[in-house]
Image 1 (tube, rainbow, N blue to C red):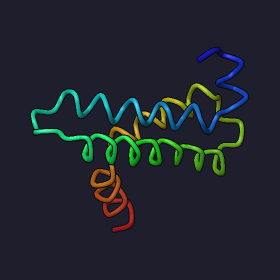
Image 2: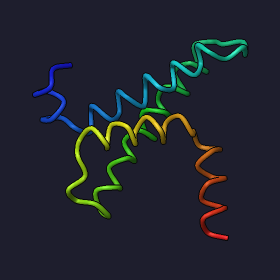
Image 3: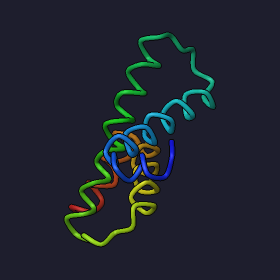
Length: 91
């Protein structure tokens, strides 16, 4: 993805970062995989990656590269990791 394309389509970029993070985690796992698991985890990781955009509400001047890194971190945590993080934050 070229630098200009990434900046003109930031949501697509963070979704792809999330998708690739999720697929990378699956490839590193030892669980038995089927297409349903692969596609489901890739889609949920892509969706989680796009949540990095909420950081712009707190820091509107956040550099694009930081948002991409945040997308990878959120996708890497996954839904269960985010639940645990929110529970600790809210308690």
